[in-house]
Structures are given as C-alpha cells and as structure tokens.
Length: 167
Image (tube, rainbow, N blue to C red; front, side, top):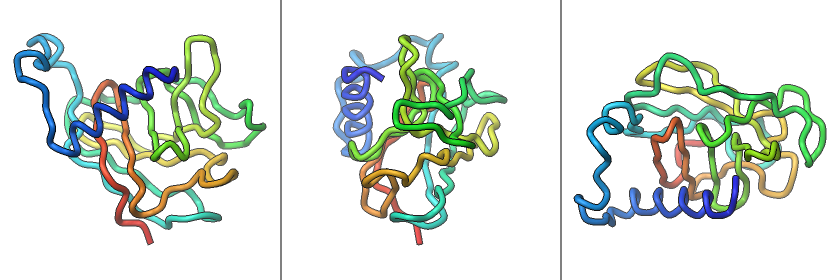
C-alpha cells in the first residue's frame, strides 16, 4: 500500500473516531455507490494481546460486506521471510493498520505486499471474522495491545478506534 493510501486510511479513520466531519455535501457519496458501499458499525477484539501470543480474533459487524471475501493472493513468501499459514493479501480491499506498528492484508499493484496476511475465518453480508497470519508477532511490536489505535478497511467500508477487549 502506498504511503498516500495509508495516510488516507488513517486520516479517514481518525475523522470517524473523533467525530470530526467535512460538510455533508462534500462528503456524501452518490446514491449508486452508497447502496453498494459496506458499512462497518463496530469492531471487536478477542483473545490475548501482547508479544508471543497467537493472533487475536477480530470481528467486524455492519452491512454490505457481501457473501465472500474480496479476491486475494497467498502471503506466505514475503520480503520479511517465508511463512506457513500466513494468510492472504487483498489488494486494497481488506487492510488493517495498527498505530504504524504494523499493517496486514494490503498489496500494491507492483506485487509487493504486507508481511502479515489476513485469514478470514467467516464472512457474510453483516459480519466478518478475521485473524492474522503466522508472521503476526514475529518482529518488534507486530502485535496488538489494548490501547493501540487502529484503522480497518473492508471492501471500502472504513472504521477506526482503539483496541480493547484483549486478555
């Protein structure tokens, strides 16, 4: 994911979480795109946080996610190393960013990808359940902790906040 895309994702998530908004006329999507654009109403985290633990489970609740995850490619061979069960990258259609500590799930048009993939555990129109691939936790602060800021994008639905709910 290019820096400009990351900056846009973080800025959009910050706007959502702090309640700041641009004028409705400037920000309103067209009726056609509003009907198909997913909406993430909430994100919850479960499992353990911190270093040296397995990936937590991330649950997105909302609408318009569709019946299946977006197209993906395996993320087992990365510039960070070779991993088994490292999940997938989804272009710009499923992406997680943790306070600039790590990213997961994104890939660029040139084929480069995040070192941490995402594994969809279940996916339907109103709920998506994910975890991270095996590269999660393998480098300095490539893990979630309560209090971390995050942004997540799923099929153009966007949400951000502060991680909570981890043991």
